[in-house]
Picture (cartoon, rainbow, N blue to C red):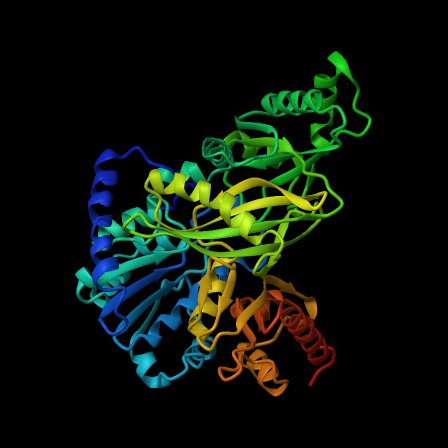
Length: 514
């Protein structure tokens, strides 16, 4: 398979033979799940393809995005299982210091033993094509991956997201993906999510979905204002955007009443406030016509939070609550994902989990597989909270890799009855995580420099105390001055204090040469 991939190729596909072949391949996962996964001593091979097969225009607006393929390096911690082999494929080589950093987190496993079971392959291609496309374009690399899998009856693939491109890759290699069939991806769009929430009995903000044009946006905004005369703002969202990059705010300040409203909205649409740093109305209008989107009421409130709940649907159809988080949002319109606190606030975390479970069960009924997240906006009302569901992410998101790190580093477990993560010794652990720690002064730091700073200042994760900082996105540091971190503490306050201390240390260390 050769040639560049158009953005339209990443969505659902009506290729019936390919879909049927993929479903037959996916059926093998249940045997792995029931007979191999429960026993960590049994052999298996995990192929990790962290391809960001998403809209290229949206991706281009994310600083350091070529290095987001490194976010799944947390799965190198699977090598703690003594007969597990990991094959990790990237667009460009990963610095060996970064690989060593993760392998040294494997407490109780000799470095050499783990390294011998890790196969790193790459395309030597830093272009903006999705990684999965690059692999399919390189038959010799595809053959090397195939050779590295060993017994394919004991192999499966893990991806950041599963589109028709990853499906073709799975079929080429003859191994299943622990992830959602791309034919079901519409359920995770902004429009599909709103419809599924309503069917599952989960409250959503008032609004409209399946919009496809500038006129439909204007009509929806006008109708929303007519329904809610006191409404100050509304949100316009692209169906397939992520991390808030496709969101825009429309202000109703000075809006007229009555018949003049629709014309006024059309005239003022170019004044949308975009969270994306270099988006303008012409670009947004074109992208909206391409992928469609929604309009919904902006949720106002003096005390407002943005929690999320994560679930996993296993190959046997079981639904498991994985975690809850409070998302940290920022940017120009306050909708850009910056990080997350785990767990979500004690006064509503179980409410969020219960509401999200309704949607998770509906997704399971439709055949969804793997990890996904459900996002909410929560507003205090009297002594309680009102929760409004806003999004389903049928992929690994910004809250996936921090939780995997915590799980593998501590060997603990999430308790859905309390919403806490308990270590084997009993005491719970908490974290503050970010993908967006960014500063001009960090540019030029090499992976070795970052590790040296962390160790010398005593913030590196310590297995004995099960606290400290674990870094990711390390490859983005030198060029973009950007990195990610998971700060694990014994309390929520501990975790945030550790985050602030880490930032202060990095700022101090980078303040002057030497």
